[in-house]
Amino acid sequence: MWGDPSLYESTLAIVKELVAKELVAASPTEISVRVIPGISSVLALAAAHQIPLNRQGRAVVIEPARLLAAGMPEGTDDVVAMLDGHQTFASIDPEGLDIYWGAYLGSPDQILIHGDLATVREEILKVRAEAVERKGWIFDTYLIRRR
Image (cartoon, rainbow, N blue to C red):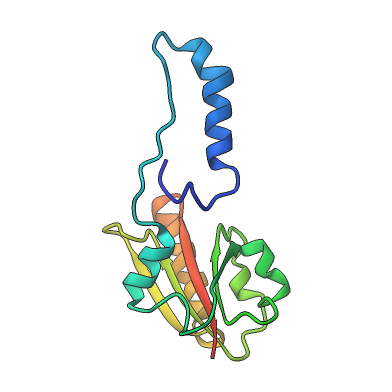
């Protein structure tokens, strides 16, 4: 699989269940799961935009985008959102927020957009839709940051 199995709440559990129940019985050879550490999309996002994930002395929160639907968490200035099939960034109050968005991070097809959320969110929606149309899928990650 491609992505961040250490950050997804169910990916490794699903793979292990498939191996234990269904695949082992059907396979003539032993099947095992191996997770190879690499560069996560979160770190690739920060590197591509040449920014730290958090500011000095501050925390960063990494969460599924559905939790961002209610807005930025209280007391948090930097939130990395993942798994945003509903483009939650476009529906939250953009006042005082910047976004650092990336798709297909670390690949030759990488796309990056950043700026004031109110200013660039329509561009991200357009570019994202075009990428999905062109490739048939998208994996994007973004950092929302309070100014």
